[in-house]
Image (cartoon, rainbow, N blue to C red; front, side, top):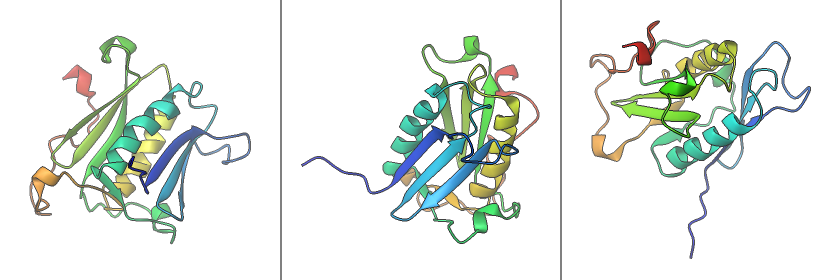
Length: 173
């Protein structure tokens, strides 16, 4: 019998009027362990980026690499508390620096996940806005990374993860 995952994540381009024009991204947590990440249509070039993120994130979440502590109580909209529990961020890079045939590529290490994105598929503003949202979601533990080989979880007062946000591009290092 095939496995039917109970947790689902869907990235998609928002329809006109579905999110405010002054926003580039909006996350909708829904009952039944489902989440939709809506990307503003003026900040993502077509549906390729949302499809790629749905495929990769769906695999991570469904198979337990990331777990979501459901945030339908409004916690997600509060400013980041700066807990630094994990680092997750997007970084737009030139197409020729991406792995062949990929528009999204994830790098994970020690509580961090950096998504390299072909810069032809999104605006800088979308990257910045998503990073601000991820600072709250991953940094404050609303979404948590759970690598089973790293159990028990790392101590909170440990040094920051290797892949901490910086103003320097990873591909420039």
